[in-house]
Image (cartoon, rainbow, N blue to C red; front, side, top):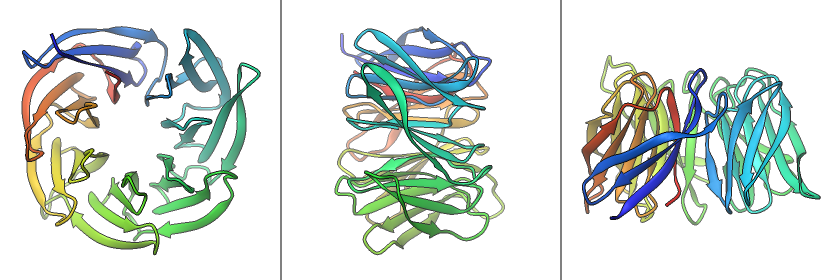
Length: 308
């Protein structure tokens, strides 16, 4: 039996981090269960044998599962909306507090390394890592703040028109292009990171439609972008070269808060928050989607990671 294994992070009052197993021979979910019970594990990151997610206990912070041990740190007033990591550091971004925080391990303890105060209520949404910089899109400011990767020193800001609501992004493998989705205007941008200019832009919605751009993912061969849009409850497939919309398909539920690709790019998984379901789509040789199965046992799912 060939399977894909992953985790789903959730908003409170759901139970925390769920695990799932998907059978690729039958195209069916065969197992879901609570993996780690906590509050507000609303974004997940797995890399370098570390599993990281935000938590809400006495204070808000992060939890790291590593080498069979559990580490916790942080004293925020509310949980981070994003966590990411590299070999040395773990990064969190807080939507309400408007902060970028970097953590590391010192003497086998998880500690805060540096904290960047962007602006309270900035809508900071992500920390996108390139070789030399950290990009933090701030939805409520219509800006992307750029920091030095090593020092976290502020370098510059990328500005978007008012009410764009820039939200999430993914960089090309060579760090030359940053593909971004906006929540408010529901547009997709390709940004040249050498000139800091917009190369391409496309609107996902038709006239008079309303929707909120959510997640954006890039295929391993860099030919396709996958974007989820709430309210209209769709997933879009966009060609990275022509920036043409190749496919528009139902997310299979209500409020597709996150999407993610399997490690082999053969499947796309969608977490629909309001309908409490996880949906699996097969990806064909052209990068197009076909819905295969859904499971309704994951309440308030908002983040997906495939680890096997």
